[in-house]
Image (cartoon, rainbow, N blue to C red; front, side, top):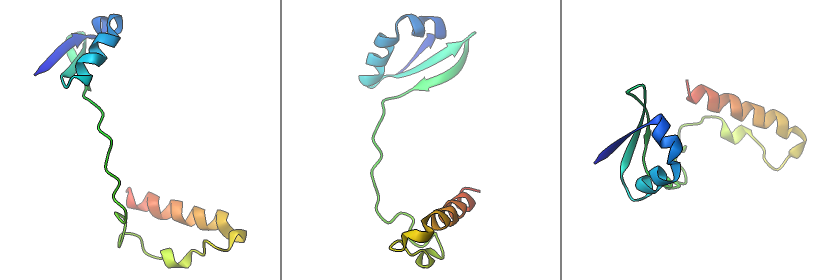
Amino acid sequence: MTKYVSLTDAKASLSEVIEDVIRGEEVVVTKHGNPVVKMTPFTKPAIVFGSLEGQLEGWEDVDFDDTSHMDEAWALWREKLARLGE
């Protein structure tokens, strides 16, 4: 069940609102009657090793044992990751 709480009430009783969320209740905070925030319990995401396998090309060009060019290598990786996010 979803509980709706005004921003003013949420600020005044934040600990209680958080306890409701921890118990599994979904809490929606409203501002001037409009929903602005939905609070749900945090669940730690599962770590999936190899989830980028096959998505990045050219990784074999990076020599992680040669630290003399690591700044350049990491810059190339950042560019590749940024392109994935586009």
